[in-house]
Length: 335
Image (cartoon, rainbow, N blue to C red; front, top):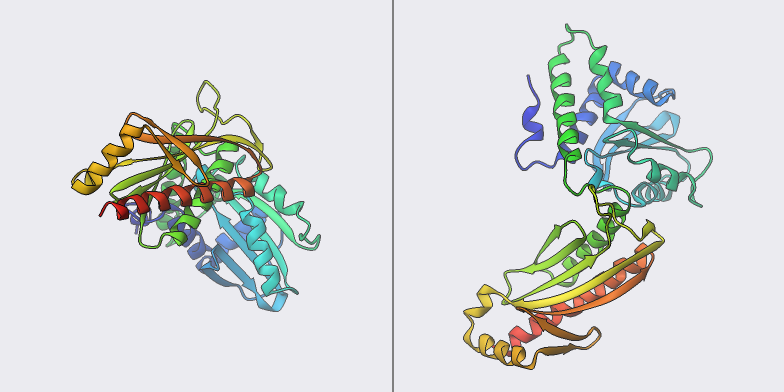
């Protein structure tokens, strides 16, 4: 039996890998023993209860008699790493089970990735010295394939699963603009803003795109399309790492808001006439954002930003909310 369909099609690679790992931890005692030996800790002496995707945590192991809870965060792509994710899950678990010992584990795509997240948790003010933060890579776990016996009925399933996951990791490493270090910080802020916009505009289709020196949120299916760009300086050579993003507390970037008449909007004759009048003026004032000047087909406005990741998330979300609301208002007025 081969597990390759777990990792193909539209299935989430992260969720598929989590389900695969959870299956091994739940049903393969020898692998679970290897797992804890790789972490250089003893498995708690208690029945192990395994669950997945519980309160956003990828894999949760509970040892009731031992009073231990293990939180496993799985990443197969560097771009999936999120700032303070381990901290957030740790705080949630402490609030729900204050007396339990909590072991947080990061399973990362490579030996180097994920280390900063582990350090953030160990240095956090809420972290207790009786708890633990540990890290393994998928290549560490795949070493079990070297010791599993061929006569083990799960050998083919296990080896096939690890081979599929390592291929996903290798393919992701070839990305032109990999999400590492500073790019992760900016990616996290943009996605946080996108989440806020989804709440602010229920029913509206919003997209996300990333390029060499920007992340872009855009509206879809509207008569007037709005773009919100987070623009940043990058190094001149691949992998084009962002400059001016030394850590989540020190970010320098540019936020650009822009809007234009969509192909759908051009079929709306009253709106098309109104748009022609706007273009003739060459500039459009949006309260809260300032004047947007016509450049080609787009009205654009750029604003510099300097601050921390929380401030960037708020600024992105607010500027995006204003320009999308104004675009919606313009198309309503013309109808």
